[in-house]
Length: 506
Image 1: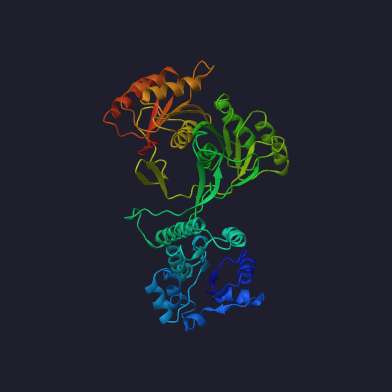
Image 2: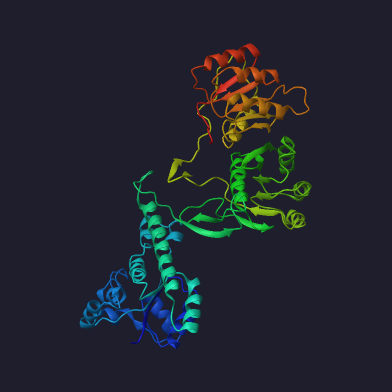
């Protein structure tokens, strides 16, 4: 029996060569619309879809393959006598290859096209043919990805047919694609923050060498429907990225871009270890580095402005895994290339784009709105008023503490986060850790500010801060003991601001 292939592709990469190969193997080709025209113009003998359906394409091409003569030829089970007698009686010929890729809804939904224009990129006939062929994979070879033309060609060339294992894998790829495609459309149309079913559409960008640890496998996926800084970055230098690299890049970039001012953030093990703002890039980096010159070693540095050659030379003085910035001067890039393993990342997406955050638990997934708020109001509740510099440092402290694991305390002085207490099981430990680290070799932290991600349950944190010379505290407030902490501040001559916004990060 002569074999037949149905080809209908939006992405025509490699299709001419593959179609020529099928013709050489004496396989008839049925095609539609633009694909039919493309193959004909390139000298291939092709049967137009309307010759099979006995029906002209209609509704601007919306209806052309949705026909029993197509789906009967795909879905008929070859070793089912009744099926074969039925399609023979109806004059339907079997279809043995279905080669289809879809309208690029993933791409078009991210453009500035109108709603109605985007709707027209929802493919109906394509997914229907693919799903039919995938269900019938024992009898039909279905290809939805141009990357698979070579594998199919190789098997037919060497074995005379496509193996069961390959057909099964190709069918699985179809349902993997159509489920993501439908998820993207659902997210576009369904105006619900938390719909009944959680459908997300992500595409693998690349495999990773391993996960958090060498014994764990890993891959990196990016959203098919949303923009984002960790989707659109470009690597300009260095070895391949790891699982931990990307996680740390994400945090460093988010912190650096909390600021409109020139800002630098250093991250180590998913935790900011130095954050600073300044009038220039070089100074911002130096201040961030000096917050914790030990932890920054082997870390990641993000700067929210172009990096110049002087800053590049300073960055190169220590071992870093990654530097990430919106741009680099040509001279700076040349300096960085002296370290062949140093990953240089260019990212031009300054603000986080994700609307939701997802945390996987065993057997479930937590979904929440991304944390976009910072401060409701800076309500000064003490007798002592903060200075203008202290107010600025309070804001810096809250921008950093938002990205630090709870319990979190950040000590800030003159535009630099000099002490960060993170991930402690009680607030007094976090406070003591941040204060001790910030003090370093100094005799006092006179004039420094302390920021907390959540309210003080007791006055002990205020008393501890007073021992180190802290003169201003910022915290959300909301404890039944707020008055106790306020009174402690008044006793020690410390100003306190309440923001009304908690920033737990578990």
